[in-house]
Length: 310
Image (spheres, one colour):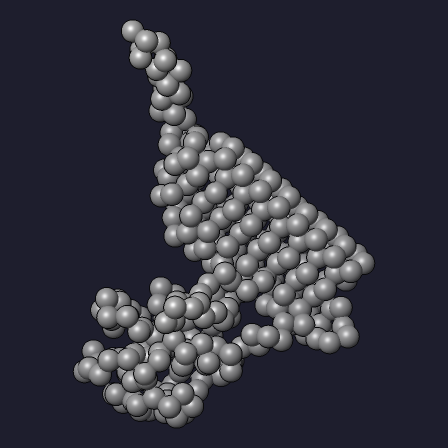
């Protein structure tokens, strides 16, 4: 998430009650997860095994719960509860609980092209853009900060831009990690009925041009789907996964988080994807493996009773 205007790191430290370690004249430009940060951004770390990853990241400012000498070019904000401080900043600088405007089906800040068609019961949140000749069928809900291209079709009951399913375990309970990302749906995408597409935690969930989603498909936070992909009913894609161009996934495919599916891969019905897969190949089964390998395994399995008898 990028801030609308820079904020002094001194003011941020005062706001969250943190001790500044390092130069206090820096300006904060954004607040992001550790794997999304850029120079000028702030992130947090509260587990020792991730200290090095945070300290060597692109982040300029790091909320941390351990006193130490900051690396060159970094400023540390010493705080007892870094996650709480980080989450509080998200809530302050992003409309976490105010995606919509009361008594308005389409928020005043939304930009809907005159040629777009919104059917009865559609609700559109703040800072949404909807492009030319896009059709949105009844009872679709579009949360804030969603950007939809032209010639897109969104079928009834779909929800786009909802909060990420993302929690931090804190002393035996789960604390919600506020989402401040966005969703981008490119041109000529079609989304079936009752699909759910979550916004990124701090980055972008993207569906590429020409991709088609069947009914009841779930796309997790920060997922990037390439161009001209096809997903049959009840597929579920875990957060931060990358699907390259031309991938086909048949019904009830489940894909874990943080993996990559290569260009042109075909996933058979009910595939369970637990690791990254190469492109240009067909896969079957759970865990997913190359179709030819799976077919040989099944053929051998059918012979097992006779082998046991012998």
